[in-house]
Amino acid sequence: MSLVRVQNFSISLDGFGTGEGQSREAHFGHAGDRLHEWMFGTRWWKPGGSGGIDNSFAQQFDAGIGAEIMGAGKFGHPGWHEDPEWKGAWGSNPPFHTPVFILTHHPRPSIEMDGGTTFHFVDASPAEALKAAREAAGDQDIRLGGGPTMIRDFLAAGLVDHMHLAVVPILLGRGVRLWDGLEGIEKDYQVEATASPSGVTHLTFTRTGV
Amino acid sequence: MSLVRVQNFSISLDGFGTGEGQSREAHFGHAGDRLHEWMFGTRWWKPGGSGGIDNSFAQQFDAGIGAEIMGAGKFGHPGWHEDPEWKGAWGSNPPFHTPVFILTHHPRPSIEMDGGTTFHFVDASPAEALKAAREAAGDQDIRLGGGPTMIRDFLAAGLVDHMHLAVVPILLGRGVRLWDGLEGIEKDYQVEATASPSGVTHLTFTRTGV
Image (tube, rainbow over all chains, first blue to last red; front, side, top):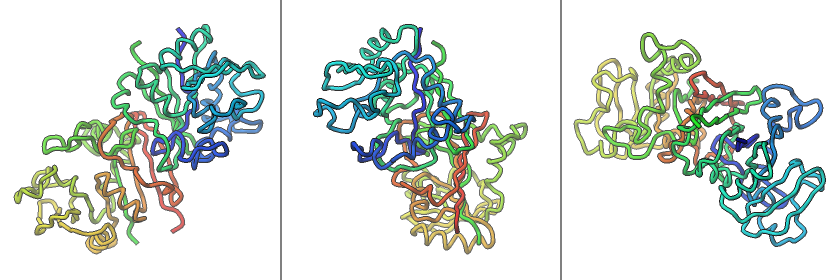
């Protein structure tokens, strides 16, 4: 059975997965790039980057993934669904290279991009979207791409098998929290923390007893 | 100059320093003992305990401390101020062994306990309480004992020099958060994370540039 995985999802010390004030120019609002600088420093991201613990985690982003599910807020700024030409902020060759299922209350026809990425738009529950993604992924795993709201919804529905979070030592103070309403979910997981010299702490949640 | 320090203050992954439903029987509400089990396993806490990284942090609780400041919610359950006999939940020889300044809107005469602890009750701002604690501590440091609300208030007032937090891999979901309203405070600190085999991550905030 393929796994449902979260990879490289970054949160602040106070638990925000994105800042406040998201816009077309500021995908993460007032957080800017601060949640992802650890990743930009890796060899996985750029030649000459570090090959240490941050890289070991980062490179699992693609490995064995056959489809992604993402929230509407990751696909675009608030209001993107009113722009019929909007195809995401990643250019003609997005970094997914698989089918991508976008959760939205405003579905539109699928868009085939370069490099193997196809965007599908689904107005569906987490379980329904997962069913579609599983069919598209075949034997491979499904990545939950974020934002925080969709990951929280999948966690609450008990649908996440593996989760990798990077906790960044900043306090955003405002934005969208990952953790709201998830009391006790650690009971279903083995939780492991690994501190990186970069200052980030990598947290992994691995489902137990299934 | 003596330092203002937080030692062994435990929070859940979702940032709660205490659970919901605090009472005389449940000092940390529905959190029970779960925030502090890492500490109970150390040599500092009991003979035969572990001598590893958790112990190294834990034993800094007393070292060089000349006074503590604590919030009313640590000194007792909600309503303790209506009980003229209440002397805290630590028995006749509390584990502080220094003057302790309790922030309360219901001050009462000081209480001298066994073992060097004296409880002083002050209706004061963080800065005012700190002034009194500094005088009592002499050359030694002042420990901020918690709970989360008073630590947050001291952080917001810029009065904390060193902070040691133990992040416990549980999700409490409800209670009192440490982090609310502290956007950007990391700018004033060097933040370091150390993962322990016990599952806890030790975070230290060390003030820079002062």
